[in-house]
Amino acid sequence: MSLLYTEIHEQPAVLSRLLKTERNHIRQIVEVIRQRAPRFVAITARGSSDNAARYGQYLFGAHNRLPVALATPSLFTLYQSPPRLEDALVIAISQSGQSPDILAVVEEGRKQGALTLSLTNDTTSPLAALSEHTIDLHAGPEKSVAATKTYTASLMALGMLSTALSEDESQRLALDCVPALVTETLSQSDAILASAQEYRNAHACVVLGRGYNYATAFEIALKTKELSYVLAEPYSSADFKHGPVALVEGGFLVIAVIPEGKTASELTSFLQELKSRQPELVIISPLEESLGMADVAIPIPENIPEWISPIVAITPGQLFALGLAQAKGLDPDHPRGLSKVTKTK
Image (cartoon, helix red, strand yellow):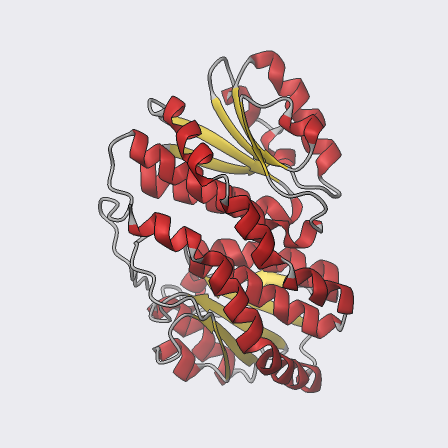
């Protein structure tokens, strides 16, 4: 059994621990945020953490009415031309808390008087030391190179922060249900791993998602690339129509995430149109209509609020990428050319 498989299955326990341990601490951080009253949020991250940041864009925008920018670390390092951050809440997301470019954004934010907050799995890291406030992801050691439990913990931490800001009790209760929903989804692990075997010869695919699950599309694509070396490209279904749809022909692999909510009708309708080109459709969804179109149907639990569906929907994507790596005879714990901590400038 791979380390990655084990860590994927640790996610319900990690999410439960994070909910229990950090809730009061996050409320304290929110009091400071209210006092400082930032006008916008700037999130800095790389890799999987950058995909979590995409989730944060939708979350803070929809639930807290805050404009959200993804920081461009090269402006702070290579170009030495940082934008104005004095009225921002600067959030840094980093599993290791060690990448110099992420540190540079936080350091500049502090120089300009911005409020700084880090989400990290290492509270002894340089990032935690530099930030005014830190949320510990409580994921425990993540030994496999590919991030899984630190990614979902980052999503949960963002969800907890947004919910504390909105003071919405229904949102808080919805977050409390997530560990059980992930557990239910992971009960299909063997079937999902087996379903990937059919695509052992795949060399390219696209991953579609929209809204909150735009982040999920990016993260599934990243896991597929780094674990199985398949060229997986993520798209919003809206952007995919503007040219890249020409890629799709008979047998071309398309992975789609279709949650309940605002995006379901558009995504389902688009895939119905796409079916005429005879792609291989892998669909992650709770919706019978959507799953009915799939060559590989991966159901997730019903009645999940769309805004928390990315924490649940990513887990089948992680497993599918793992299954694809195993089908190709690859070592999922040690992808070629990668290391656990990547330091970029």
